[in-house]
Image 1 (cartoon, rainbow, N blue to C red):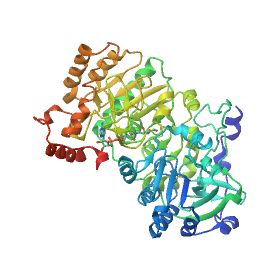
Image 2: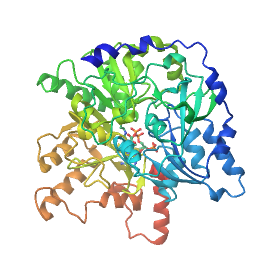
Image 3: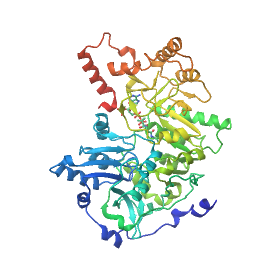
Image 4: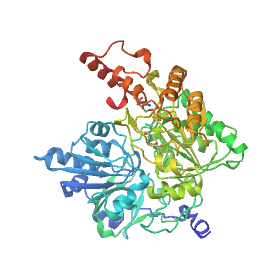
Amino acid sequence: MYIRKHILNIPFRCYSSESRINSFIKSKLMSAEDVAQKFPEQITIGASGFTPAGYPKVIPSAFAQRIKNSKNPENFSINLYTGASTGDELDGVLARTGRMKLRIPYQSHPDLRKLINEGKLNFIDMHLSHVGRYIREGIFPPIDVAIIEACDVTPDGRIYLTNSSGMSGTYLSLAKDIYIELNQAHPLEMKGLHDIYLPELHTGRPINIDYVDDRIGTPYVRVNPERIKGIVLTDKFDSSKGFKQPDDASFKIANNILDFILHEVEYGRIPKKLLPFQSGVGNVANAVLACIARDKRFNSIEMYTEVIQDSIFDLLDSDKLRFASTTALTFSAQGQIRFFKEINELKSKFILRPMEISNNPEVIRRMGLITMNTALEADIYGNVNSTHVLGSSMMNGIGGSGDFTRNAYISIFMAPSIAKGGKISAFVPMVSHVDHNEHSVQVMVSEQGLADLRAKTPKQRAKLIIDKCVHPMYKDQLNDYFQHAQRVSFAQHTPHDLKQALSWHVRLQETGSMHPDHQQSQQPTSKDTEKAAKKMDETVPNKK
Ligand code: COA
């Protein structure tokens, strides 16, 4: 195939620009404060960054300072578009101005989360694969300014991105003005990691990616250099904290998944050389990759995903990573140091793609992925809630989990069976919010076991989930609900008692626990309600 044969080796023939600060860059240099002064008071910003990777780190603080120093801070309003969540230097500083009015499409910053859940910030939680189209078609307000982190800029307008691709290509093509943060912490050898290709609107032309390592675009984003209004020099690492070491439950979940995959190989439903993996954000997702690295039954894997975290180093060290396609490299400080140090060898194993490609349903479906994402809670019929605590409090957002789940070859959802020391069961009669419905969720797994939900009726799914996934402390209770629902339900296809279906959530809200042993013995008085609200603050993470 033309693309594979002729473009595959691009990283190796890229660019040995010795001096980063060329005459073009010199002519555009500005301070972050000067850039911030140029911004309109009512501004829509399209920023680089996908998870805390490759986001701008100094211009947002300077803009926040300008707002703080202003006599009329109330005149300012900020719409912020990114790839996904970003670091404190962007999401945190702008949230704390109190002037952010719209945030899309994903976040995980505590200050933003607080504003969203207090109803003070409009957050649109959306499938990441939809973002580019919505913005290009003018469904969202147009972008005034793109602030993009880059590791190099050439006089003819080639912009080389850093640790993430995210939405940068689209924002660069649409923004009225472009400002670059040229981050010298990144080696110039980063050039060549990216493969920038933006799909056309309204055409049925296929996106020509058949294999995880196919290249179809350019290693830079090209813009008219006149649109670059300023360049600010920085030298800062991404502020990703890394993740907690996986706990025992995460390892058990991981092993249940690996056993299932090998079972599928045995039955010929997954080829021996396996299918590419997508692995979501979070600690459990990390544990799965760590387990593959340790497990002798797995030799070599490929990834087609949107976030690569530090757990990839376990796969590299065990020589099990054949290739990884992603839109972000979200490493801890140590991870970034290692990646930069080994960039020349590692470049042949990674591609960074725009979010429009990494999350594109067409490509995901064609490639046949094994997707693994995390649920906050799931119900007995296999509906999954990944985003809302008690149906109303936003955690992070759906991110790419819907793009991958709906189009997967095999879609797996995982969750520890209990949270908060057992006060919360991850498996409930009915989820309080649906992100992924029973039609898309094929496999459910906890540390207790794995339920293969494919080709099962709702009642068969309920039996399997209760039997395999639920924690022993909630098993009888959930089984009782299921039996009771079959007795009183309006119909028998998907039995529910609508009066009881959300009673576990109500109990959590009122008593601080889903477990009846924690239940208060009498009807709550107003004092009890205050106490319960306090308990909720201690129990539910978003209320902190
Ligand atoms: N109700 C209330 N709180 C719950 C809960 C539930 N049913 N289940 C878990 N929690 C709490 C945990 O106790 C923890 O709280 P803490 O931070 O106070 O300790 C918090 O939620 C996060 O749980 P943790 O087990 O640390 O999860 P994680 O790091 O694996 O993340 C998600 C889990 C669901 C929040 C995360 O995967 C996510 O945001 N997913 C949606 C987006 C996505 O899937 N993107 C990937 C696409 S590539």
